[in-house]
Length: 252
Image 1: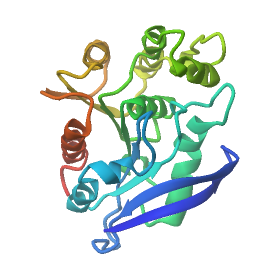
Image 2 (image 1 turned 180 degrees about the horizontal axis):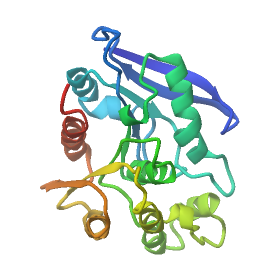
Image 3 (image 1 turned 90 degrees about the vertical axis):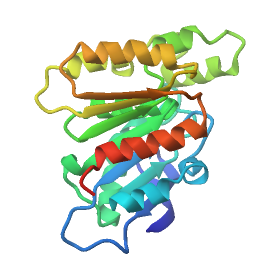
């Protein structure tokens, strides 16, 4: 496997930004398409964190899969009210750039997206905003109810100002940022991603995960849900990303 650190000029966010890529160069036979997982980081992390705290490269090697990890800072993968268009970058420009630079499949059936915590929200938002571009979406210990997440943030918490920069000073969440609305909107589509969810039973996001899991189960989505003992940490996330990749890439 190759591990690359790239600096690319992204037009949608109007700056040079960092990307980490795991690529199966030594197992590439030129025949089977290389499936790709876009793997998103959490609010307190950066684009390198999955390679630092998990066995991700080994999991990718087992499945002969590429993994792309972008940097989005603390944007919640959103086209920010007072900032740059990270959602456009991750959902549209980044796949086009990577598919032109690397030997990875351009087929939506071979394109997957996932993330943990804030990255789980970003993956879900990206998949539901472009349901025809992604075969599946993985949510690991994910933020799924952004309205409640903001409501639970005290006025004195610095996160409050971050949310205002992302969603506006009035903190009125648009339908496109509300994952309950987006899931309902896309449910009737013939072409939509399948979902994988995992959360630790001691995670502070566990109740939120249960609510969204039950909401999805009432809709016509293909959903795989797993839980086991764990908290909001890398011990859980390392196991979860392995299980998720085994689920996404069962034939490799």
